[in-house]
Image (cartoon, rainbow, N blue to C red; front, side, top):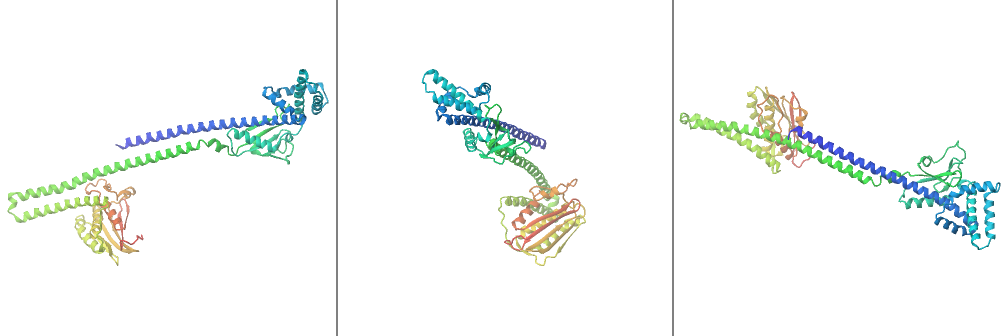
Length: 513
């Protein structure tokens, strides 16, 4: 799969996830709007019921005051029969003001009740007249209350109980602040079930309880009056928690699953890129291995043909020469195969170190002698500064020698003109440090990130004679980890590279660097 196809898939997947999240958010917003409308409708319904109950309580108070409960039963009959007394109130008020001017409504009601008490006639017409008179008396008493202050017409504690009951009956049980606002005083006279004795009349002071006053949840009180004396207002500080209550699980679930989807998608894309890179490196590895094996095979084939030639068979020196060539090329192939097998063992974590006392200075001395011939062919130099006073560490001599030889071989290969290689040692806290530095082509930051990856090889531009499988530095890193040491690299393009190795004196010692 090429990069264009991968990026196309990434783009489509990203757009799909964003669109799904946007659609889900649209559904959540709709649910919030529906919940808010439902909440508003429920609250207004509860407030209307509270206002009606306050009016009913006022009528019942009139009946109980004048007739020891008889009018209460009358009112219940009137309400159960569907008659609405409120509609007749204005007519009664008009008649009272027109026909009996100057007579207070309370006096009129008292007169009517006095007549009703004195009238003991049981005929149908008398009973009908008494019921009509009761109705007139109730409305007269109600009319009388319109001239009383609003706070005197409402029981503060009873209002709190009624409001709680109506809201809970409708499924709303959350924190609230409520108050009764008087149009006459332009301020609240009752708040949260308590009378406000310090309310200051007059429009100049402005209303207290700003949150309650600013609430949209309000209903007029005593609508049977010519002018409503005030309002019942409610404020819900925790309204958002009620509205969002049923939405939070969906919202959190959407966020969680979207995050999981994006993480899995990101991980999948990362794996795809890594696998693509590994595939490319393996392809390079196979190509390099083929090239590395092709050359010695061809050399062995030519040497074998030469030995079998009748002209060569009689010349012992030439036969010996070609036999040595075959032996060297065979050893070269065997070393290449050994590298691959070593990496396979490392991958399976089956490498076992043969820990022993190892003199690092001696290993470096032999390694420098071996690489010197190759460096001198390129008119280069390799030197060492063995400054470690205690060069003996605990480790596997074979693997330590291979690590140093690999780094020296890389320093030579990536120094195309006159290699200048330096190997130095010094004692540090808890162990020994080895620095192998060259002045070759160097590496950029991206290359330094991957040089210890298996099969990875630094790009050399137009330099095509650098051979290898890309296994050397991954082997170095694995062996340093096995020895509980560290390997670091400092490099700049065009200025060369420095590999810094740290070996602890003892395998059980902790790394101090």
